[in-house]
Length: 257
Ligand code: 6CM
Image (cartoon, rainbow, N blue to C red):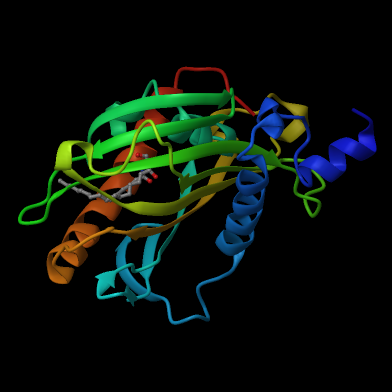
């Protein structure tokens, strides 16, 4: 493809993904770009209420309902030292390590590999009493986004997860699960404190600013108070556990910029 074709196809990315050939690509591209913009909007406006705080981690939500179901959008900001945005996104995206940090999932299957950076997951979540068990079927796409405002060229990385359908995996797996629909993104930006005298960059010089956004529709009846209580407990737990996991995995490895 020519440079011009690359730019018109990808919009923001540096390299062409094999995913651009897939039927879902227009949606994957559109939702990923939308989510990136949405994540970068502040929480000053739009009625965000802070519901959890731990050190530099701040979690906000907006209480919303759709057809009587809780669909509260969530937005979290955090600052993580010693890791890059690429590393954060790599561990969030990778199915190989999902079960090492994810505590709400009972079973995870990759049902389609669209490209190295784009997978389709089927996940069965742990049941929350007294509601039915939930599952989720979603594509997950990871990409690097050049930040034109950053003269050092340290880019932004994003992973976007968004519900999709697949006729081989219809809703209601033996009537056991209710399918949730979700749109989730993790956006990470790396900041580097340049070491003096041109010394080599170490993990002490790196800071990663992350934004995590999530909207989940429970897909069927679930008591609002139970759901809100679960989210209030589980989201902070997830973000603390996940970031600690990435720090631990990276500490003795070369930096992945
Ligand atoms: O974003 C997160 N994880 C990703 C990879 O798994 C993916 C998953 C989103 C799941 C959205 C929540 C579905 C809710 C289903 C019911 C929850 C049961 C909780 C049982 C607790 C014992 O984007 C991290 C998701 C963190 C969710 C709290």
